[in-house]
Image (cartoon, rainbow, N blue to C red):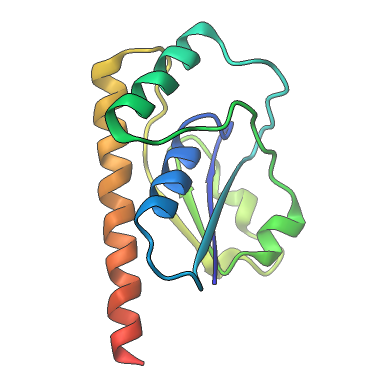
Length: 143
């Protein structure tokens, strides 16, 4: 099974979900990756570097420096698509046969290196990923 976490730029929310999922997931038959609907081909800003260093220190998650853009092939390969954002239009997923694979977690974006806000949002994403991983455990027991 392949899970795809998506946010707007793939610079924070979807990467946190992907990295945390990889950290806690014990089922090697379930893989996760992430992408953004808008690929950013610019270096991280100083605020993004501060944020990423904070996430690594507090949560042990090392985020990629580069954004990964969303492509139809990535959507088609995914068994489950989770939009980790409140600013990604759901209409993007209305066609292509992936509509039924989509779950939306309305997670706000952070605009600056506000550690309190980053901490709050990261914990919210972690809580959602924890629940997702637990749901896969329940599914395996029912099979």
